[in-house]
Length: 126
Image 1 (cartoon, helix red, strand yellow):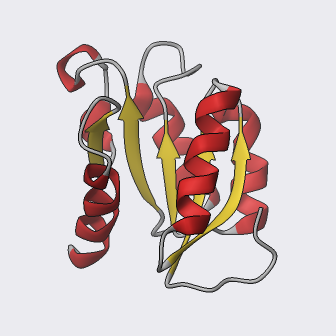
Image 2 (cartoon, rainbow, N blue to C red):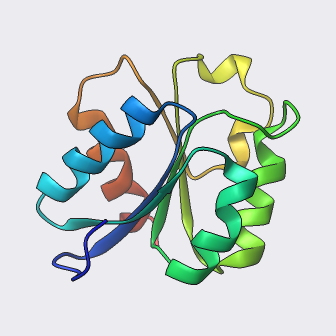
């Protein structure tokens, strides 16, 4: 986790894969304009950390939210007002219940720049 913000957006990563959290964290820290605010393996477990770190955006895998991503998106938004949520999953969007509650969706197999473009787009929508 970066101790000094050096960019315009802080990013929190929620993914059940330790390897994915590590890789995304490294890519965030290497990406100009972003810094890593934190990471967690479970979305519900991360809500307190998200509330404490007040990130600008959460990259959320389709993990433990009782099959409906809108449940955790709601909990995250209750913790941090105006936060952006990007679902980043290996499942196609049409197989994720509640994915429309997020600000953006990016398939994990998409081009690497797709995630950064989605983050830029959700901020440009403000």
